[in-house]
Length: 108
Image 1: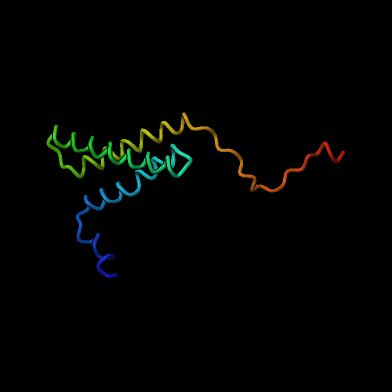
Image 2 (image 1 turned 60 degrees about the horizontal axis):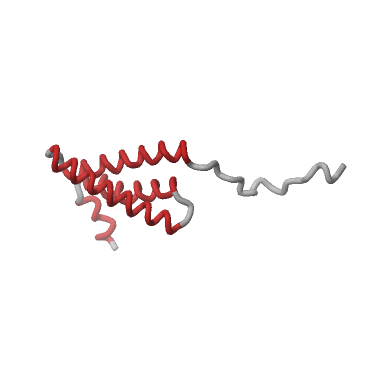
């Protein structure tokens, strides 16, 4: 168990950022865009795959470090999805946790 907790220490800072980006960004993008688990999984996988391919392309075409390019494209994807979700997502419905609503007309 000790090896698992020390593994990130041996990775460089850029690898930690890349691991964090691969774990967090697709999940956040999926949660912003989808309601069902199936759709969230599909969107998360597609986000990670498309951002990885785009990051590899940017890295190759501009002779940049691969990890940083992938992290940058994942960050750009998060910004784009966040902006799109803000404008295109339906407003959340009330969960009904505020307590029972009384119909005041009935009691008059």
